[in-house]
Length: 219
Image 1 (tube, rainbow, N blue to C red):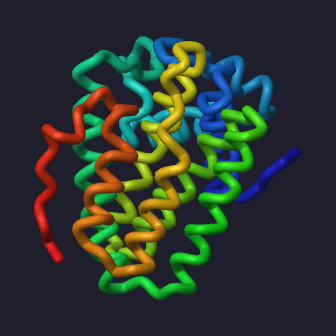
Image 2 (image 1 turned 45 degrees about the vertical axis):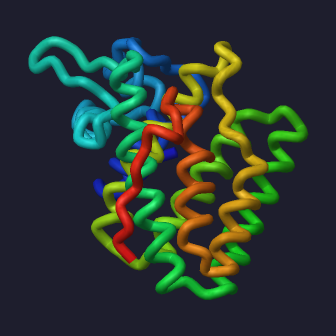
């Protein structure tokens, strides 16, 4: 496949590396072999380096100048830090969604929740992760806050990488059934319930105790 447009070529290489990360073909702690990617994709060094730099800006790759690039790893502290940010952002988004979202918006969320649950029932964890991230990304989009949307893109990607990294640890799954509880609270415009269910849904995966998390009311 030959792509002439530089922007399209850059996106193509970025998407390819991202797919390698989210299917464990490229794992946490692995060095990125830029030359191998160039040969595999039939591209020059520039779009590969630009894609790697883009992943570095998103916090997914660590760059060691003039040496190599390496996929990030997670320790207990970094997991909890990621969780606190994710929970804060999702709770803010949920509050804004109550203000700015329509039932039609929530219907889209419901479809994503059902697709996530179907993948869970089929033990298709990769699709489960995909639809779970789309559910939370859509929730952010319903908030209609552009800054929040841009920040969430990086957080969702990090979470998917973490889920994939922990695939063999049997701790990858948040309780997908709680998507329904979040939806119920959104449809009913129940602020307290949406904050409680969102926090409970995310906390355990990030090794946090929901009881220790105090969510600020912005709405």
